[in-house]
Image (cartoon, rainbow, N blue to C red; front, side, top):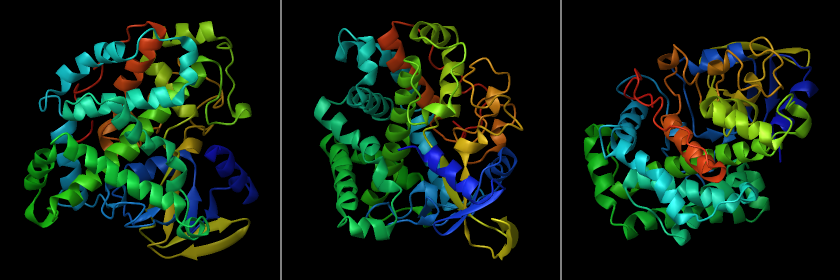
Length: 402
């Protein structure tokens, strides 16, 4: 279940050095290396988990995670800007107004919340899906459609398996995701939201416009589903587990709760500083554990004591879950400490969220502020706390950053 445990085991098997090999490329883990890559113009391929991605059936062909951020005129820059302007801009589509209504919408929909319901993953995922769709589209979903979109979280296992394994499983998981993509676009049609994507497509430079427009809809909803609903659900579930002094998807032995060894102490820590609590939880149990790029130059590496030289174009995985535990940067890295002074350096959201140099990370998650707010909304509702929303959004952040 734990990807961190797998990564650590493989790293140790290769001598606990800088690199190891898995799939079709090399993996790296140190904070220094991951930070360097995250601040660079990354060359990407259609690859996931350091293997060729199953496209176009499992993954949408030109989904953002496969596009290289190679300049302001790139496909990646055009689509990311359009995504921000259409869905995540505080001045557009009533973003702030919708954020302000989330708490009451969840309260009206989820009556009499109980602490034990933090163990109900389906309930948490359903509320995350409803919140994201409301902020982005102004539509509060019913349970049936929300359960459908929660499939972006429940089908997470399907995304990491290579084509060969998928074939051994008779493409069962691929077919589930194919149907999820169809059903997701179907919800857009059901809600008569097609014009949103027509407008978005028209806003792109002509060479990056999609034809037919439903292709763009599929690509954008893939990002919203995979990263938005799936990633935020994972964050909410991790926080829900930590509040109960449970380790979430991380191995139990990989987390030292220290002084926060009771649920009451955890609740008090969340109430004191919810942003820090969420960031520290996700440092230790991140929604996204790693990402795939490619080498941009000839690279010499040592694997299990043997030296190799690899050409540009080889897949290269950077591991955020291990970088966030690098003892060079984080003292007592396995200890849960929402008060650690350099928590803003964690790379959880594909960059240092809240750091002074945050703008230096071109691929930092564009929806990180929304993800943080939705996590607070759901946890507020269960605990009866009132963590403020929009505490960070728009304060000196470049227009494509949040």
